[in-house]
Image (spheres, rainbow, N blue to C red):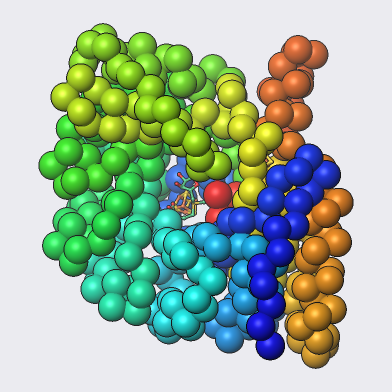
Length: 349
Ligand code: SAM
Ligand code: SF4
Ligand code: SF4
């Protein structure tokens, strides 16, 4: 059946355009801003969607207007045969932008197969160029493999390689320019992300947040005048140019939320759909899917939930600053154990 993609809008007029699909909640790192705890509760394996189910769910979203899909995790490359999912999604002609976010460890082995399957845009998370810092941040000794993975991506021919760096005061604030220089060498745009107080970030504190202003200040002391790039985009990154024409981005979710234009939502590996990174409740899509609900009824469910969407999570968190209570955790550790969906590594960032 052919459906013209209708533009459906939420209560603030935001369209449904971009889907982040988490393919696993498992991870081979333990980044301190994402998985700082010693132990985790995992999504039951039987609940994790098959690739066919993921492609079907994605198809319902693209029927309703989604045209950007990003595979994420946990660490998406830990999901066995990921290129097979990419092949299924590549057949969906409504997806105009199919991308992947990874920590890079397994890219050396998988980049070519992923590229051949049809994903041509990749974002690698890279917070530091120093192996000792990487080990301290992630509790794993995998820095070399991440750097090798980035080199492989370059060789294979991916376009628009991005390196995402969570900028943390007292951790990597002295590496911002080094990361940009590294980005130049591997033909990647570096994007600095402000440290967010999402569920799972149980070590977060405001004084570790390196703000957009502080990032710009540091970089302009090193490079001179920095110009903002003027562009209309729903992408979260604000882009800037250095005097030599090098571009970089800042994603200022914590100090300058961009909820007003947010067209993104997230599906976890077990088919729970969240309207916001900070949302505490989601919509179960696995249940109806496995119960054999008709495509029309699943689309109707998605449409009505999106039309009722009121989420502006990062703005709500920011509003807590006035009352001086932003340091209170979004979600306590015990609650994260009871419901792993609340974790950043289940939602996919
Ligand atoms: N494992 C993959 C990776 O690290 O690229 C994909 C999933 S990870 C949850 C997606 C992104 O979320 C990463 O770039 C990571 O740096 C970012 N992230 C995780 N926790 C964060 C936090 N508390 N604040 C800001 N970004 C965070
Ligand atoms: Fe780090 Fe990504 Fe794993 Fe979170 S999911 S611990 S950000 S590698
Ligand atoms: Fe979108 Fe929620 Fe992030 Fe705001 S906090 S930009 S609404 S996902």
